[in-house]
Length: 279
Ligand code: PAF
Image (cartoon, rainbow, N blue to C red; front, side, top):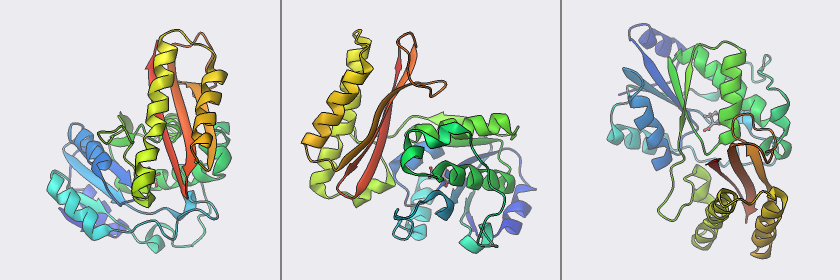
């Protein structure tokens, strides 16, 4: 396994190999990322994992400065997992040599909804860095986790709209035994908050069961969840929303493919999760 830091070296390697599956990450890897690598293994002859903490997708006051940079530990985890050919870990000045990225990829209105309403510019930053990484790595396939459901939606529609020649593979959310969605940001949680954080999955499962049993008052379900989280000391609930899983538009009672999405803040940590429903 090679660790490559420069675009030139990555391109030179890419020119010598066949099909490539790509797993873009910001590092600080955990078992959830390993499920992305496992999915990638089924898709192509070679695998590239990128590790890059992308300043463009962090807003003011967010955790860009403190986001854990753990390249050595990440490389050891990837090596133990096996099957990855290249870790692409560029410095900031390699991807953003002019400091300010002048040409950016502007997603449509969905970028201002759900997480985008609370993180202005976030999805522009994601779409821009993913496009740059696609241009550099030139993968045949790229794997993204469903935990970041809106990100996955933005990337799928970007690839379609811009005719980027990359097949996007959606990978189910990795969960701890108690249901907590695996996330690098779980590392910010105290032991007590880690236990409390499982309440998100508990509510998602509860709402899913209710909808499967015929409940269609989505506003009531959402308000119950918000009320319970706030009563238990969660700092804020950004949203609890039922959406059409295919379009991410607000769910209509006649929709058959739904997704319930939650974002809420526990202590200083903002957690997101979601669950799909097929009726
Ligand atoms: O999901 C992530 O880790 C990031 O948003 C991504 C896709 C690597 C872009 O920086």
